[in-house]
Structure formats: C-alpha cells, structure tokens
Length: 341
Image (cartoon, rainbow, N blue to C red; front, side, top):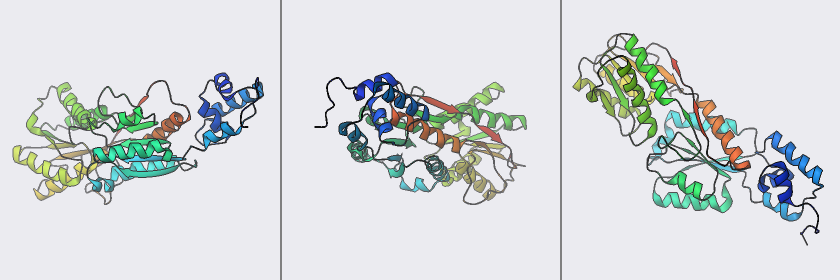
C-alpha cells in the first residue's frame, strides 16, 4: 500500500520533466510556501502531461518542512543584539517574510559548542534554512551548515573568495565615495575609525579609505587609522580620543559605522572641536538612530531593506531547489549629505 502501480508516472519523472528537484514537486503538490509561480506552473504542467497521481509517500515529503528559518548572529557579545544595524536587519528580514507562512527564529551562536548544537538543531528539521550575520573571518559555521546540506545565506562575507551564498553592500566603493567627499572639501588629515579587522566588511571599508587617499595623491598614514574591537559607540569614542591625541590637527573622521560616528561626535564635543567647522565626520549605514545626532550625520547609506529582501529571496529559492553553485549579490551604496561634513 502507498506504492504506485507499475507503469504509472513517478515523482522523479515529474521532477525531471519540470526540470526541478523531487522536493520541489512535493512542495507544489502540498501547496507549500517558497515556490515561485513559474516553477509551480512548470510542475503542474508536468503532472498534467504525465497524468501523475500523488501518493501518500510523495505527500509525506512536505511534512518534514518546519516553515521556519533562523536568523543567526555570531557575535560573542549578546549586547550586539541592541545595536541599530542589527535591529534594522531583523525588521527588513521580518518584513520580507510577512506574506509567507514562514516563521523567523532569532538565535545567538558564540562558541564551538553552540555552533555544533545549532547545526544539530537545524539538521533535525526544526528550520528549513539559515540566515547568518556578523560572521567573522575564521568562523566555520557557514561551512558546517553547507556540509549539512542546509540552505544558507550570509549577510556579508568572510573573505574575497567566499564559498557560501551571500548578500553584501559595496563597502569599498561606499567608503571611497565618503573619503573622496572629504578630500573635495579640503580636508587632508582624515582619520579612519574601523571595525574589527577579522571582519571582511571592516577590511573593505578601510580599503576604500586608502584607495580614495591614494587616488588623490594624499599620503596614507597608519597613525590615522584606528581599528576598534567592535562597531559600538563607545569604541568610536575611544578611537577618536586616540586620534586627537596622535594628531591634534585632525580635520576629518571617516567612521566605518554610524554608531562609531556617534562616538566620534561625542569625543569631539568633549574635546571642544566643532563639527563640521573644525572636524568633519562621515559615518556608514544610515539607519535610524535611537536618538538624533547633532549635527545630522552625513553617511553612506546601505540599502538595508533591499539587503533583507534579497537575503530572504535567495534563501527561499535555495529551500525550493538548491542551486548548483552559490550566488553572490553586491548592492550599491549612496552617500547621503547632511550637516556633519
């Protein structure tokens, strides 16, 4: 019982004719979420053409779906959950899932034990896919998930030759545009507040800073670059104080995040420096801060909503039928001019 009669079309034949995997056929039969309309039509056409009649075994495949995806943050400090960038991404991802039955689960993975525990949890069928953010250079979690066959999409990347699907902003180009703007305004002693250098995003933003100076034939001085432990406001405050101690003639600051820039503004006020008259400041992200910055911050806008939508789209597509190769998407940034530079 439950087996189709000899000679009747099989699930595999339907999948072959439609050009999809057998799991996709099952999801179409069971009217599951995450299947593109064009794919659904192709499967239905193959079913009609072959005269396929679904059986209980085919239907049972869809029962393994959890209709849930996990958004995983890999920072060791749980307080990073409160940073504006993270909350904006959660909102963007949540909005992108609004019209689907897929539940969003948030989790923090900080140690090897937690990595292994999460992979086992995900492999147990509790989630259908994983979204990763804040992944550092040597983090093995993306590879562990890929080896386990779990659809995975990263926000950002660990290196220039990432082997997992990711969505990223043009961090190098955005930083280059910001520093070029400072140079065009006559600034020459431009400090850079970077994030942790074991994160590729921080490396790219410092690369853009260096490229802008080199193109303008301005010396790149290591003493004007301070890499922080993280992207927090307190890190930006400490780094700016350090820059002022090294270079009292500092006339501009490029901060690799808006929270770093907020810390820079605080440190400059404490030092009696006017912004932008004495020191111009540019941030990176353009999220809505918990409190207004004074003066309003010139910054590089990441398309956070588009990043969230694209991550969800790629993940749903991989859940539908995993691609032969990973995909890389880099989205454009925009320099938003306000009063700080």
